[in-house]
Image 1 (cartoon, helix red, strand yellow):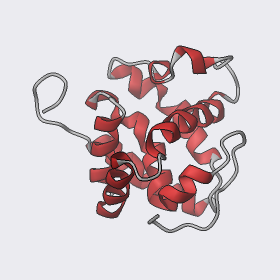
Image 2: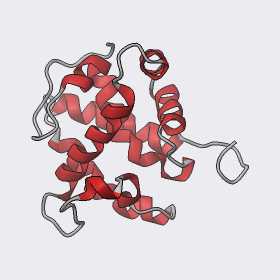
Image 3: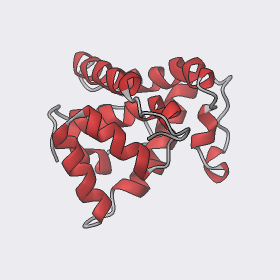
Length: 160
C-alpha cells in the first residue's frame, strides 16, 4: 500500500533508474549525468506534489538554491551525503537489506530505499539517481566515493 492506501507504483522510478544506469555506463561513470537528472526531475517531482528540497534537511541545505547553474550537482552531492549516513553503517540491518536489494534489482532497491528513507511513493523518482549509483557500482563503492566533487567512482559492475 502507498501513502494514500492504494497500490504502490514505483514504475517511473524503476524506469528512470534503468535509464540512469545505462547513461552512467555510456558516460564512463561521469556523475554529471546524475546531477543533470536531479535538475531535470524537479518539474516531475513537483507535479507529484513534492519539492526536491523537502528531501534535504534544513541543516544540510546551506546555499543550495534551485536558481544555481550547478543546482543538480550540488543537490546530488548533498543527497548522497545524507543517504550514505543512513545506508553505510557497517554490519547494520539496513546495510544487509541494501545489499540484498541490489542483488534483486531496481524494483526491490527502489522499494527498500523508499521505506528506509521515508520517501513517499509519489516522490520515489528522487531515489532513481541513488539507486542507479548503487546498481552500477555497489554499496561499498557508494559508501567510499567522494561527494564533494562530481567525478566517476571507478569501474562499473553491480554488487558490493
